[in-house]
Image 1 (cartoon, rainbow, N blue to C red):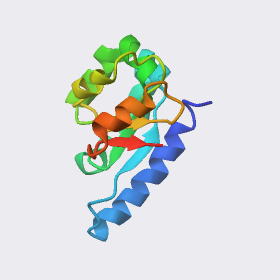
Image 2 (image 1 turned 30 degrees about the vertical axis):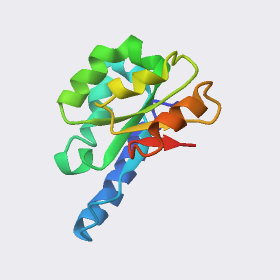
Image 3 (image 1 turned 135 degrees about the vertical axis):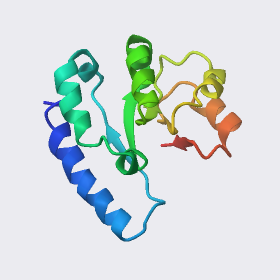
Length: 135
């Protein structure tokens, strides 16, 4: 279900982005869920990403993935980044060292939920980093 709901969600968001472009609103960014299980299903992945396969849309959409999925799908995610897709990563307790954040420059945003064990350390080190979002 999480994969199937991405098609209408991305289609509707594309319409919102088209309206933003017409109204010359280039500052808004949209963070949307992305189901990493799609990365194993090439045909379905292509179908879903076809909706947002436009540089103007890709510039405003950030596909959100979980940190725990990064090691499993690193190659596929980096390939999509090369194709122009932007990603946001949501940290979880599988993060062992807050210094790892400095190595995450390829992500547009880094979301740090309050439940993350290293939340205070990350906040202390990255308070002024605009890419880091604290929840």
